[in-house]
Amino acid sequence: MRGLMQDWPLLCHKLIDHAAAFHGGREIVSRSVEGPIHRSNYRDVRRRALICAKRLDAIGLGKGDRAATLAWNTWRHLEVWYGLLGIGAIYHTVNPRLFPEQIAWIINHAEDRIVFVDLTFVPLLEAIRDQLKTIETIVILTDADHMPDTALDAVDYESWLAAADDDFAWHEFDENLAAGMCYTSGTTGHPKAVIYSHRSNVLHAMAASAPDMLGLSCRDTIMPVVPMFHANCWSIAFTAPLTGAAMVMPGAQMDGASIYQLLEDEAVSVTAAVPTIWLMLVQHLEQTGARLNHLKRVVIGGSACPRAITQAFQDNYGVEVLHAWGMTEMSPLGTMCSIKPEYAHLTGEKLLDIQEKQGHPPFTVEMKITDDDGRELPWDGNTFGRLKVRGPAVSRAYFRDEGGDILDAAGFFDTGDVAHIDEHGYMQITDRSKDVIKSGGEWISSIDLENIAVGHPQIAEAAVIGVAHPKWDERPLLVVVAKDGEKPARDDLLAFIEPKVARWWLPDDVVFVDEIPHTATGKILKSALREQFADYRLPTV
Ligand code: AMP
Image 1 (spheres, rainbow, N blue to C red):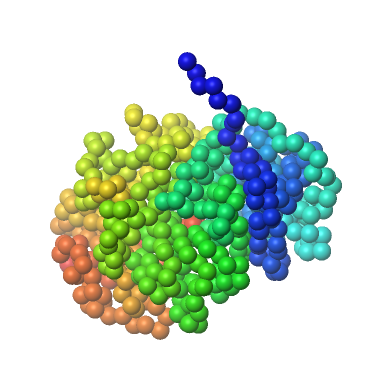
Image 2 (cartoon, protein in one colour):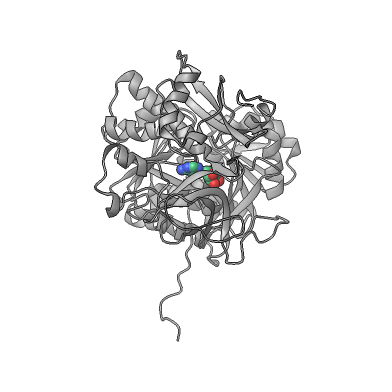
């Protein structure tokens, strides 16, 4: 017997319909790329998304067509997403921090037909325009007054919109239709495209907004500092309208002072970004003595959140830190470190120990850890292995990838991360599987060592890599950037780390550098460091 419930497909644009109908006046405040603060609301974003959809439809875009965006978080970018979604076209967020050749490769691979580009990235687009084989239309996300002098055959977004009205109905289609695409910034080979569906995005947004995850409500104001081009905007472009939370979009300015200004002026209650952003904000707060008067929760993920940041937010500013883990292939949320009753009694250092973990998953994410032969490992908070996941918002294949299905026999996706899970289901990442340091047949966690090193008051950033050793195979080398004006001593730093780790984990040496290389999504580029220090001779050799 089948259930007798209505067939109501899970379509992304139903989220903006819901927000416009029930939270229509809730504000969407953006720092525009042109400069001034812009104010809109859900009702208006939906209305203009309908106009955008009508324009797209008029130029022949529809189901399955891809549209690139090279854009910051603003109300216009949000309208474009929903405009595309409403006709079954696919938003393809391109990370503008990639090399121009990579961007051209990605746009050609995706066969994008139209590109929506912010003023900031017009020069970038000009430089690669003649390499783009499938782009028919270029829309610059600005108005006629701010159109740059450009050789591109382009139109400004406001004039482009003005050619239609909002008398338009969203198209009807199956919930499994592709909705969005995002290329992962692989460190080797070409990037691979993850394709989200309407169904996966909606299910993921419902899971991600739950109380132990983002915990969003219509009383919140959320500022996604995480760009819309990073891993599906951590789903905030969907969770905010789903819950009716107001949004603050930071545009192109993500320095400490600009972020602080929006947090205060717009009374932001929840925000989310990678650790680098929060390092800049905390430095700004320390330098100016400013306070955070509205912010309640900050979601930190994308890379391991240093303990010192969690401590600064919670102890000095009364803001709760939610350490999160995820990946592009997971839409992206995998886990969130909210505190379960089992750990609710903890305070101080003991609580920080738990918050260093990446946390527990929402409903819709299943998880296991295995050894190299695929045998499941125990959840004892100690034994680490390959982290594998399964769920309705987890990838099963990449777009046009010869690899085909990427799952194991039980349908789990290997995240490429190495982790342990404790008895209460809290997962902690110890490494990327390719970054793990193998010393004498045992594994050393580079992330643990990095976390400890950045806890040293004179250290701004730290990376640990394995360097060849004749006896142990590999030994850890600590690479650090000192804080401005500081001159930390090698032996001091090692003495700081020593009591906090097993003796054989202690790095064999420390090198001081001016800068650590990063990927386009702000992660430490370990492959480049390994190349740089490939011939490094450890003092222990
Ligand atoms: P991306 O798809 O660019 O978001 O990258 C996903 C990868 O970032 C994961 O597989 C992890 O290796 C890493 N990552 C994300 N969040 C965290 C975190 N909280 N701690 C450690 N690594 C993380």
